[in-house]
Length: 306
Image 1 (cartoon, rainbow, N blue to C red):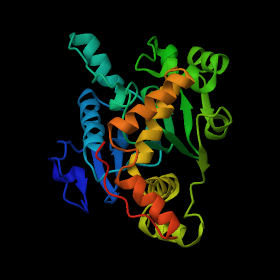
Image 2: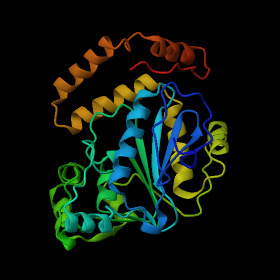
Image 3: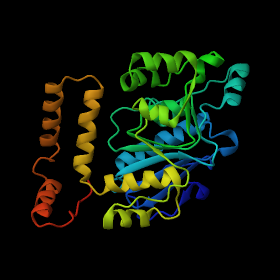
């Protein structure tokens, strides 16, 4: 563990934290949320070979750590979320014959990741290009700062977006838009990506919190010290973390079955069976949720055993 890579751990992890270098920061806005920051701002947060494996280990750790309910990924600095692969390293690899590798889960351990149990929010600040965009396409919720720029410029430098984005992009935005994006290498503003359905929400740079009543004020308080798109991501993560962790994970699983092309009837039967097999149907959190509703109080969820 590199001390510079961890800040303020507000709970005792059940599993050892992954080993990280200074190029990846893992912080904890709350005991139920992790914030992963790509920390190479001078290089526009381009991801090196070793960093791919660091990031993959974080997502695996998150899924296995019972108290964590949601993850966020963002980039350090004001210029970039992630401008893609480290092309200097790539060029050196071409010249020396040294092999570059990625985990099976793809670029940043995210772009080709399937069936992750817990939701991941992308808080996109600045440039989001190439592999950075490939990661974002495979996250669950995408928030973008008003200055964010998206694109797949691979065709302009003679390579291919081969980390999982191409088939996923078609399913998200449709064939013609995906073709335009991948074949032209064009860059797009955040509002345009929102219109395409790839960005959930565009957040102004000076965003300082919404106003959603007492619960909203409580969430904003926990997001103090953050600003803009990251602050908004923490607010949404807090809303997710305030729901039943069993229900969130099963709902995510069911949605991913549909995205993978499973038929409606088969997908519904699959989710129903998983709920029975894993003890979610009639389980502790389901009983607590119904009881809390009847008693008109906030539910006290237990960590999921899924």
